[in-house]
Length: 333
Image (tube, rainbow, N blue to C red; front, side):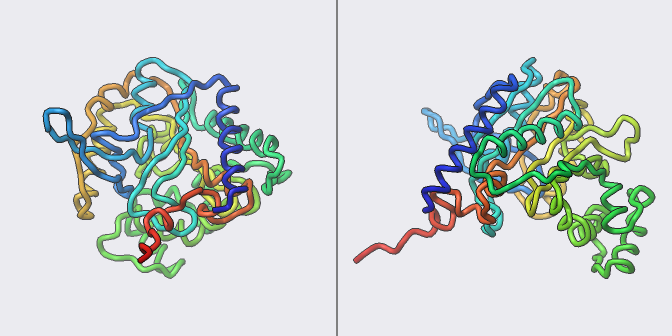
């Protein structure tokens, strides 16, 4: 254990919390164990069960994010709220950038969109970087860049993306002929999109300056609303800094019927992949229309800490990383 880095981790967490408190955000402590976790098809919750005093058993999962709970709080009328705490994801690689238990901060505000999310995120990182006197990370003079998905594909892949939206055959032809990618018969448009994006674009983002990537294809909206000027796109944003993706946020979808349909599609995809599926969270869906015009973003705290202390491995800043917690020393005889 590197006790000096562990102490610095604690200091940086305090600075992050201090920034949000100073901006008038209210800290929420939402449940870490729930009956109905998120439906994301590529995230895997940890499952257990809760047994009450009468012996009745209830399925339970550790949250992959506090998103559902935070949006229900927005629906109850709260504004400018954040949750800073542990989240849990199974089947993640132990590659130095992941741990099955990690710190995430999510914050939400009413009457906001992706521009406000980008403003909050940039100001917080700038302030924490300045306040942490031993920072190894310096924000370049060029500052933070804001780049639409269309602009990123044009700049890094030399491709106009808009004409390809939803056209699987055209995307497949591009992948094979221009980028020498393998396309399988059951690959969807999004599957092919990501083959190109991951190999040609993502690895270049954030290296010269922190970069917000926003305005995603609607098929990748997740819980974001469609863009009001063009429903082919969604109001979603991610932040890349150095080698890390730090944040993922949405101008929130508040149409419960559209969200229900998206959940059903994700549920079907999980089943197609042979993954566990579960019922929709009806309380969450019921509250969506009451959120009004809101936006929220999830931010990986440890990845910012890694940048600030100058390490590329999450194992360096955790007091007890997964490789130690789940690989005990053999018993002495």
